[in-house]
Image 1: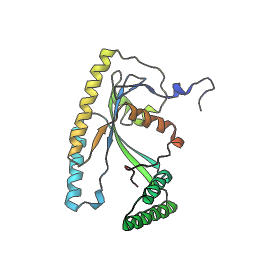
Image 2 (image 1 turned 90 degrees about the vertical axis):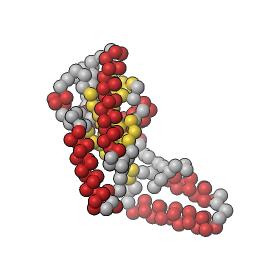
Image 3 (image 1 turned 90 degrees about the horizontal axis):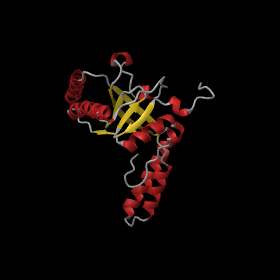
Image 4 (image 1 turned 45 degrees about the horizontal axis):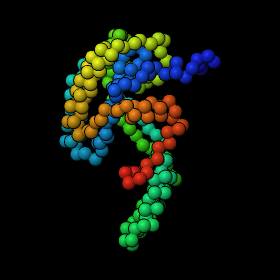
Amino acid sequence: MAAPNQSTQQLVDIAEIRDNIVILKDGSLRAVVEVSAINFELRSEDEQVAILQNFQRFLNSVDFSLQLSTISRRLFIDTYLKYVEETTRTVTNELLRIQSQEYIKFVKELSALANIMSKKFYIVVPFYAFENPAKAGIGAGLKSILKPSTGAKKLSEEQFNIYRDQILQRAELVYGNLVGLGLRTKLLGQEELINLFYNLYNPTTDQTAQKGPQGNV
């Protein structure tokens, strides 16, 4: 438990987020790559074997530590269902209106039986400027960011630019290898990183609700 005189900021190991890169207080950097999912079980046996082989090649091609992270959140769909209901009232086609009503009924029954979860997948790419990465281990990713730091190390602008180029080269290597698995990847930007870590530190406030035309359940 934190001491009474210990601020929340002292418990957060993030020094700053700059140019889409997370800078930790120990001077190391993190890039966070969001990765799409695939329906592995729906693939043929040959496709499954190919995916596993490509994933094995991907792991063998990487000469630095990575962390694979999955974040699960309960999906609150009340706002989304309200949007669908309002849209259904404006539908003039009777068949589409009936289908929409059946869809709403199905989703409500499904959510009553079990929590609907949203899952997001990330690969955390590290770069260590001041320490031996072997000491930090493969867990030095999202989890390490949540650990308090004993001291902060400062990066000069020149150092940051050099290290940023190197960590982005690592991220590009991750992109290239995952393409063969049929996955889509995206390097998280400034606002996306802020939202990600805010929700990690405040899980009870992350009541995700899909809404609007892009909403999916």
